Amino acid sequence: MKRYNRRMAIPCGSGGWKLRIFHRRARAKKSARFLVKCGCCDSSLDIYYSEHGLEINGVNASYGEWRSILVPLLGKEFLKD
Image (tube, rainbow, N blue to C red; front, side):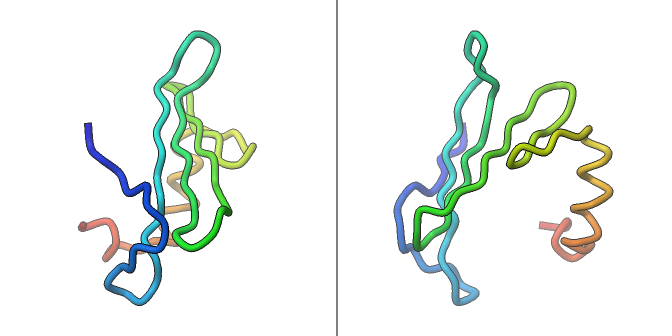
């Protein structure tokens, strides 16, 4: 499993702070999720996922719907990495 950054105030190369990412596997009635926190404060974003789709901060949609919104925002240059 990939190790994610969990420490606060780690500078990234573009002048900001690296995001802190926490992962929880699915267990019993709890869904799998990624918790993404800001690198300099405790603001956070919950991303729950399953085979049916994604829920990002309480908004449920299919993978195709999220892709149609997020891919144009990121642009093709970001998808090459």
